[in-house]
Image 1 (cartoon, rainbow, N blue to C red):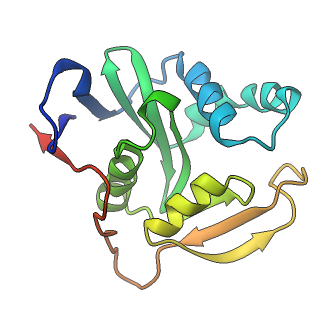
Image 2: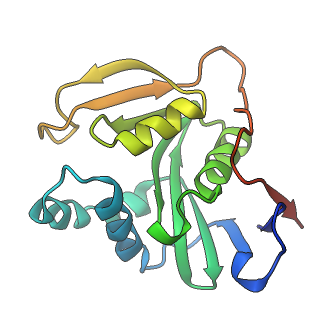
Length: 178
């Protein structure tokens, strides 16, 4: 666990972010998941979001590595789940989007957990753009998601054999403080 501070801004209490791998799968992440999905998955209906939300606790429990970001203890603002070399999920609360936290989490996944692949809804153009910016390329596309619903998926990976860390262009930098 470490605390990261925005390096290009004055550090104050609201900018502190605690990022850690969760050993216990506490509740409270489903609400953050829902607010994130409502912001980015505009192609889903309310009924579809409610149906999918029922699977979130099991997905969080099943993923081998769950990395959580909090500004206030017990109140997650972001989380990512990793299984093997695949990023299974990355969700950020709307209030912390576009501030470099998604990039910091993904970089940590690449560096510390060997993340090389991600699957993303093609209709989630913000996520697709983010992963392309971070160096991922599409190697496969399906017309439906894993549940058979008509939501095309893009299977993306980092190119090359070595783990490559994406560049740090135009995104706020974070630095770890032990």
